[in-house]
Length: 159
Image (cartoon, rainbow, N blue to C red; front, side, top):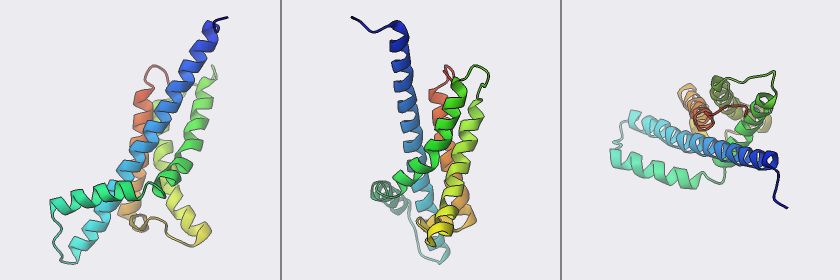
């Protein structure tokens, strides 16, 4: 017996949501890693050492792969609860969710992540987020992830 059309549509919608959220998390992670690397390299350059474009590129690529075991899961933990809540709200017929909320939730989730880890564990997990420019760069990365989620779900944020 073939599945009902309603069940098929629900499965397709859920697959689109998973792909959308995964893409948003990955974009936020890559952007956060690259921006964090650039903050550190700017600090090195401010000490009078030469930092070439090739060094920036190489360090960024190295950090994207090297931080996958730490920063990537932290980004997922910071981003998923807010985005899943927005998705749940968007499914309700009385609560439309504007795309901007995904962007704001992504930026705030990541911006709150780093100070919270420092407050709870007394440890800075990601050195670039210790400074205000670094923390703002991380918030920007979370916002970019939110843009990816919003754009990939253009057909309807809630449905």
